[in-house]
Image (cartoon, rainbow, N blue to C red):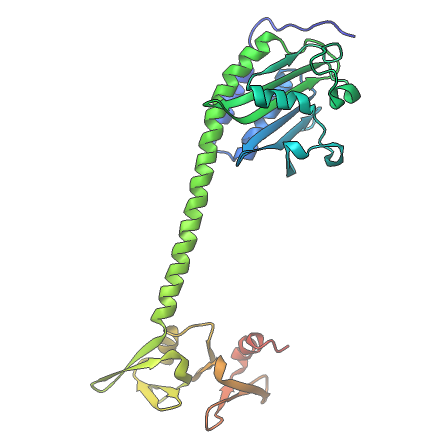
Length: 317
């Protein structure tokens, strides 16, 4: 067994590296990964895990083992649910001690230290040096960093603790800022979504009627009553069950006021309300006839260039 390792001076390089990470505009998960990569490397830890408190639950979020980069776990494991079946084994008695007492835990040789000698993980996997540190915000544990070394006793010295205290005070501030920003961004997305839904609803309601001017009269036509539109002699005809209205607006401009999910342009001179279509009949050269459910069973031509849109709308292949 190798002898104790001491650190004569603080590893300011670690401090500088992590300080740079804390200043970067990166996601919370990426930040934690970089922190764990740097701490395990500079503290001679062979394994490290990072717990983060979310909604009152302590969750295992990031793991670092050997020379492999720290990784965000695909599934966050709640502390109380971690066992050998999760493949994320930890010394639970040590983590629980740090969580409850809200103090750091430094073990120079876990194999002879009686404090945690009964821990299943310690007995089975035999780590020597262990350092476990809480991230505290106003006496609340918001995270826990766990480090271990299997080959060296005393791998983590009191100087390691001093450095970690300096780092963790800054890490806590940054974690909370990141969380706050993520919550703000989430709230912003929710507000934008609500505004978009409201806007769509307003637009939908505004399109429940269409206004048509004939001579000195303004007719308000309920959208659902429009069966189809036709364009002849520079006049757009709006066909309903009761009447055919006329407007000098082009067919294109008139249809722009209608719901695109309901009204389709099917010909250079025709547009239809799909709810009034009875059936389609193939005509010639890729064109169709759309039969409508009005009194006259009107036949509306569907041009070849428009046929794919209406077939897709009705699921015709």
